[in-house]
Image (cartoon, rainbow, N blue to C red; front, side, top):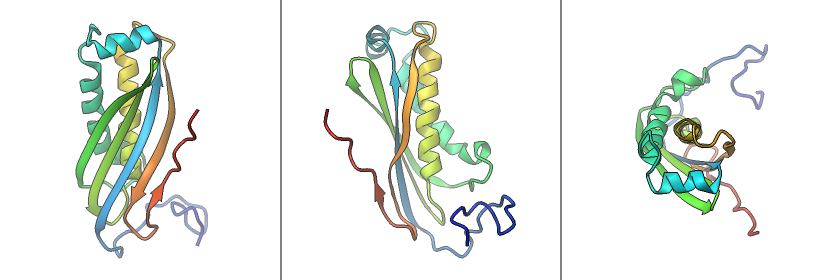
Length: 162
C-alpha cells in the first residue's frame, strides 16, 4: 500500500475508508504565529482595534473553521468534534502565537481540524488589523501534537531556546 493513503493503486484520489477502524479518543494541537509591528500588537492587547476585540473574534473564527474543515479540505471526513479550544500568547513584542486543540471520539484523527482552526484564527487577526498594519505575516502553521488511533502519539520537539 502506498504511504499516501489518499491515492489508490492507480493514483486516483480517494477518501480513506475508516469504517473498520475502532473509535478512540483523539486529540490534535496545532499552532501558528502572526507577526506584526509592536504598535499593532499594542492595539490588539489594549482592545483598541476599531473592528472590535480581535482575539475573541479570532477565537470564534478558529472554532468555526475547525467545524467546517471537511467543507474546505476535499478528502477530510466530517467529524463530530467534542471540543475545540483556541488560546493566544504573546511570545515577543511583535507577535501573537495561536494554539488550537481539537478533540473527537471517532475513527480518524483531528489534525486537519486543529490546523484549520489556527489558520482561520490567524487570518482573522490579519483581516481585523490590516488597516493598521499591512506588513503582518502568518508564520509557522504546524502540528504540535496528536494522540489516538493506530499511529499513536506524536509530539513535536520543543524549539531550542534562543
